[in-house]
Length: 113
Image (cartoon, rainbow, N blue to C red; front, side, top):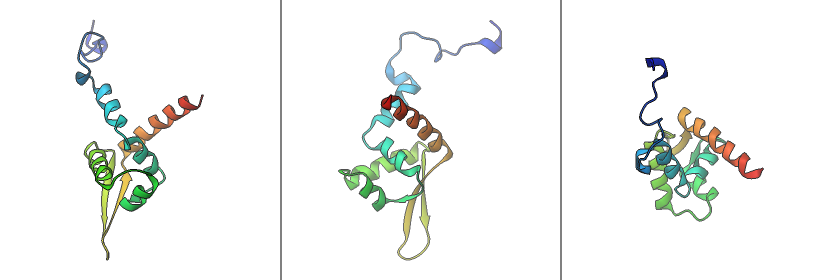
């Protein structure tokens, strides 16, 4: 095989633990309760914490805060502080987050068929 057709070890099927698979990692992350729904709500535009809390019936503030931190850490959303009084914070999808939402929308279509 030449260099243009080389398959990396991660692309080659074989025995490995799920924690070694980046796809499994992302599916597990998105499978956390609320992560996908937060992204789904943010596709409509920036939201404040309280707006997300109102839209996610049953989410506890601590859990919502943790999920927002996790999504920010993965580069899927951005936390934007707005000047003014009182100071407000909005969350918005990043380009990477918009790409993930496209994939989630495809999953939704599969669920409907």
